[in-house]
Every structure is written in C-alpha cells, then in structure tokens.
Length: 416
View 1 (cartoon, rainbow, N blue to C red):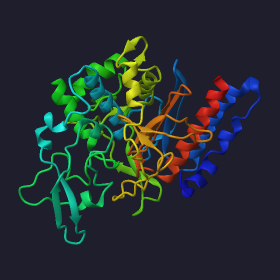
View 2: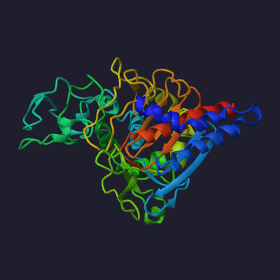
View 3: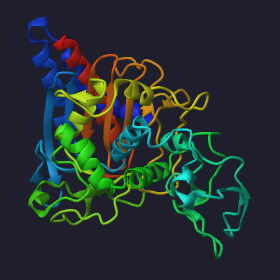
View 4: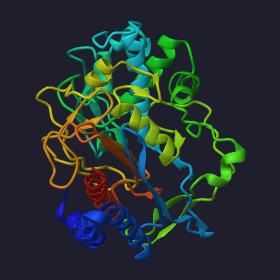
C-alpha cells in the first residue's frame, strides 16, 4: 500500500489498536474497536457512510452501519442498505460460468469465438498516436480462450484503465463487440478489462438464459441472496444509497451528491462486469459459501473442487501490477502486494502474508464506488465493507478498508 494511504491508516486505524483487551473482554473490545474506527471515519468527514460485515464459516460475527446514505438529505445509513456493487458483480459472473464448465457445457480451453462469433478475427494494436488518434493493427497471434476472459489476460481493457482505449475511435467499418481492439496477445499479461462482460455473454449463450434470470435461479435463490439483483423495484428504492463523489477537479474535496436519489434501478441489458445492487448481508452469504467450499446451509451451488480451481493461480508467471488510470473516476490503484498478486477464475489472489491482515491464498476484489471484500479460506474468515462514492481507490476510503480488515483479524483472534 502506498505511503499516502499508509499515513491515513495510522490516523483512521488508531481505534483498532484498542482491541488489545483483557482475555475476558477481547471479543467485545475488538468489536467495539471496529465500531470506533468506522465512526471515527464518519466524524472526520472522510467518508459519508459505511456498512461493514465480517463472517466466518458458521455465520456473521460483526455487522455495523454508520453515517448517512445521502449527504444531501442526511438519511441515516442502515445495515440493510442497498449498494451499487459494480465490479463486485464479477465474481458472481465468474461463478456462473464455472457452474457451466462444471456441467461440461463449455470448456476453459475452448476458443471464446466458438460461442461468440463477434470475437472472430481479433486484432491487436501495434501503434497509437495520442495526438492524432491514428493507429495500426495486426491480427492476433492467438485467439483468446474462455479462461483468458476469466483472468483478465484476454488483451482487452477499460477506457479508465487504458489511455488508448479512452481515446480510441475506430475507422469506418470497424466494430468491436466489447470496447476495442486488444492491447496485447491473449495470455501475455494481466490488464483489468471488459473481459467479464464477455464471461457474462458466454453465460447467456451457453445457458440460454438472460444473465439476471440465470443469477436468480442458480445463485441468488439457492443462497437466499434475496436483496441482490440488477433491477431494483420501487418498493426497495428507499434503501438505495445515493451515488456520491468527492468534489473538486481532482476529486479531493468534500463528498457531494453525484446523481439525485432514484426510486429504484432499471437495467435493461445487464452485463457481467458490473451493475448488481446488493447488501452487505447478501454478499456475506456469497462469501460464506466460498468459505464452505461451494455450499451454504446445506445447499451446494458448486463443487468443492471447482472452488479450489477458482482459488488457484491461473495466470502462471504473470503478476497483477498496480494500475495507473486514465480517467478521474478512479485514482491510481495498488493491490495488496503489487507485483506478487495473482489471479484465479474471478478473483485477485494474495500471494504473501500481510502482517495483521489476510493470509496467502485469500480472494478479493472491489467495486468502483468503493465497495470491497476479501475471503480468507486459511483463516476461515471473510469481510466486506461498502461505501458509495467516487473516485475509486479514494485514499480515505482505502484507509478505512485497511483499518477495518485489521480490526476483523483482531476480532477473529478474540473469537477463537
């Protein structure tokens, strides 16, 4: 984690140190320390509101809500608040495709174009002139396989993770189904991208169901994730957290309203890379299923061996680097251990032990509105912390996340 964030962690995380309490009161002290840490973040106006949850294999061991759901109305934030979880959708989409892999309906080593003809004849950018927009292309050396889209090694990008994609304007007659031409040949390196949108389309084509219907039938109903969906009905609208952002050209000011509150959410064409709304409790159930090897409350949604496959390094010697972003909606962002992190089928994988934090082999990711989660199979603990404002990787948001995670391990230690 970079120095700027580390300095904030010292401030925001002071309360977590209070968890060093006598043995007879360790659990209560550790839980109170998390409360104090999160309340402190609100009081210092670092973040407008936060809902946080910690679960072990048996159930929830911490759940708290602090601050407001809307800075303009000061509506209190509650534990059942609905957050736009953005890219925390990606692990759900990846799970869906792995269910179909498990059933033999699609292969990880299949060319993706076998199912999606729009991916045929892939092109790689060989040069791009930032001033004129001129570019040259060449045919890809190899066709991207299904597994490349699960691991963000497909060669695709996002406009906010690539200045080339941000500024790219195709020549007449050129079309790109998922945003633009490849930056590199499949498998060469890791680059955060629209790859999971491709995974979502694969789920639809192979299953014959629309993405939201598939998620509902095969993931959300079995796991009793009753508040997770793309489309949010008006009846649940009052629970939606407002979309907010830091003010100022560099997004370094106070939090202000970004978009007026909506009555509900309507997503006409859901995509695999983002768009779900969910609660901390629902996502806790999703995480707990992974802690229990693909099963929750006696219902199995995926085999234990498939969970193991998703949780293993699937990018070989390639590593996950920090990303310098190309748009203001996100700050440059690092990961837990830049240059050492790996990627499985749907998750970032922490490769080395972080003192006071998650274990090697932990799975994680986040959403652009500063929602985050991690799953630590080795310790049997998982946590999610949900905020709702831009930019992503906001320094104060990351400091709160860091302090919360450290508090979670103090609580887990006290519980044991």
